[in-house]
Image 1 (tube, rainbow, N blue to C red):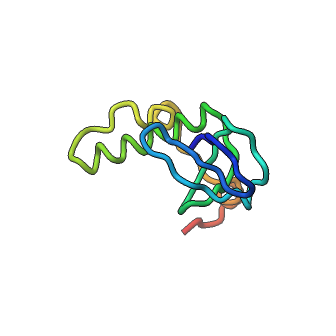
Image 2 (cartoon, rainbow, N blue to C red):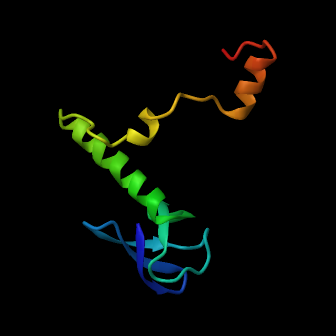
Image 3 (cartoon, helix red, strand yellow):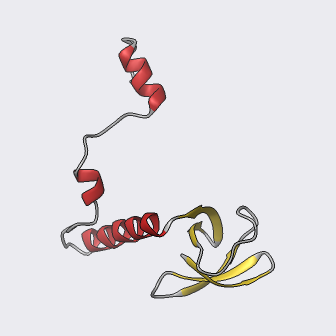
Length: 100
């Protein structure tokens, strides 16, 4: 969501379709225009506009899939690359250890 106005530790934020009051306690003071990753009314992380667009596209794709439609380009950034393991699992795999 993008910060519209700030009042202390709360901000009115918008995702383009709705507005919501978001708690800023975990991210600190941010100016209007800042993009935030939010969950359950709380800002979890400051993100860039391109990251916000990718997240919104992915959520739109999931909504479309749940409505019986196709994903479209919602996960194009993931489809364009090979899958990868988290570093600790890749290290275990490279060392010949089972990951399961």
